[in-house]
Length: 378
Image (cartoon, rainbow, N blue to C red; front, side):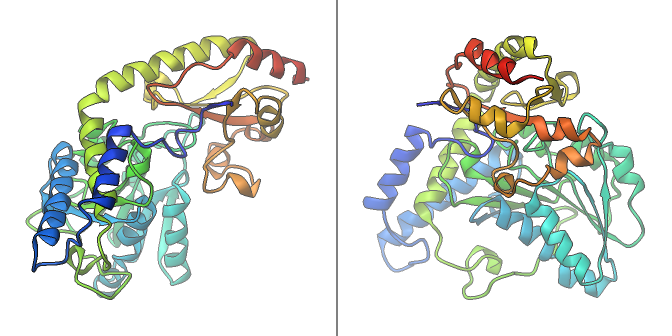
């Protein structure tokens, strides 16, 4: 079997987390909304424990954690959930970036089709957005600023703390898609000026199908979100439906383990990265994002001169499982909107692959990997 190097798309569930999920599926299977017996009480306690585990590293209250099906739903609720407030307040302008995940860009496109104005700040050639450029795009009628913490394709860590420090303390809401960084870079996510945070469990060795939206209080109140779905009072009325207690419990444990093991995991990931970069050097790769400017240690995005990304993946498919972009868009065979926004040459965009790993990933046969690609060059 090839070595799985697509951890930015999804991670395996930690065995400790899987055991807890299974226990809540088979043994502790109560509905957290059932108030008349111990099974329901135990389920509610498990949900509250998970809220506490997710809230702690972010320095928010348990009540600020709203469970969703994942970061995509959290992004949609953050953006589309402010639509009614925007109409009432007359603030119909949103600032975001051209490198956001489609789970942010497509809701923004929906609002644009309804008459909202959206300004997308472009990154530089290394994939980084300037905090000053974001701040300069803000107008008196700006409703929201939405900036991802780290790009899922390049691993470039964006200056969200600097952006936060440049924002006024009025009714301008700051949303951060932290799908790739929660559990890895929690300190920046704890910034009190970030109003809304989108999280996902399956990026940190938790189960798929669960995530959270953090709705931090500022000046005593949260962002005035309106629900996108109806049919129950769960999650403060913003996300109706029976809570998936097993998944939520697993997410909570995954968050706790990520916080406790963050340093050791980061060190192991950086060691893997350094080995990979050294091994790939004979190919003279064009590497996107810079370590000195901030990059996730488990993502390496690069282009090999003279080799198309599809050719790279085919030539090495028995060695590694890698991708040429986001798992949500790579099947489309369209040029990466992230790399295009960086104004890279077409041949670099077409040749880019993303390699991503975790702290226990074994190194593939890099020598053979390089030889395969050298045979394809020019």
